[in-house]
Length: 327
Ligand SMILES: Nc1ncnc2c1ncn2[C@@H]1O[C@H](COP(=O)(O)OP(=O)(O)OP(=O)(O)O)[C@@H](O)[C@H]1O
Ligand SMILES: [Mg+2]
Image (cartoon, rainbow, N blue to C red; front, side):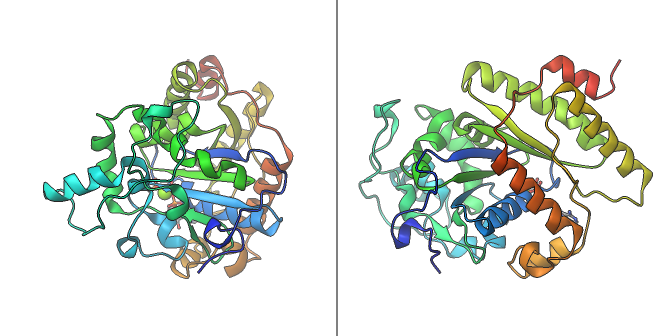
């Protein structure tokens, strides 16, 4: 299964001839629609003729599964690209990895000018890991062993920049690279924020998700200061919207009212629909599986907005405290 865009099948098809936009889809709150957003923005942008790479940076591997792959059957994943085969081999020897893997091999991944010494010689090049998906986007898959990466990266050189280094050789092959983050603000998510040009934040339409934004932006603010000053906001996307409940309507209104403060909140919100769960089981996007649900139109609109609009500045902490309605 290789898409027309896959480096496994020839060069990528960046339509603009420039470096693609690398967008981390991030929210430390679980179950707010990060993976669903990656799948649907990627599928919608492919429909619009863009070339898209997605990166599964979550040991739950939901993006990998939704994209048609069985994590346990993949010989190599993003983990091998981040950590290197030698470390994987050592960990196997120490009994920390149950799955048998092939031995170490020299990498063809080019060190970057930015940090030439920080790419281990046996790191698996990203081009060897990329897979295709039925929706036409490409995928750097994950499996459960990625959970070990947090522990393993801690002692490595340039530990916050491993993902940036891994993706550097393929960034110019794609118009968009979306990174699906895990629901935490650990080292993997920091790697995503350090590599990204922009962040996109799905927020489910409920109070605690809304409040979690403040913590997220505080963390993002630190990353911007310490690791990645170019980080900007592609948008906040309200998800799981249920217009039948007053609570859902109120949270959406609060979010949209923040546009007056310069916060980009994409519209319309993504309506709640069981079709998303069904589509995941069918390994398809809702764009194909149930194209008439409002959520399909919302994701197409969000993709069109992201494609058309340059990113905006991240909000200040003061904006956010006001937005969260705190005294
Ligand atoms: N608009 C929606 N309507 C109904 N269900 C949805 C919608 N969007 C996502 N879901 C479902 O909600 C669950 C969580 O969504 P998803 O996996 O995208 O969230 P997540 O933020 O990636 O979760 P995690 O933090 O665990 O990675 C999934 O079962 C998904 O199918
Ligand atoms: Mg997810």
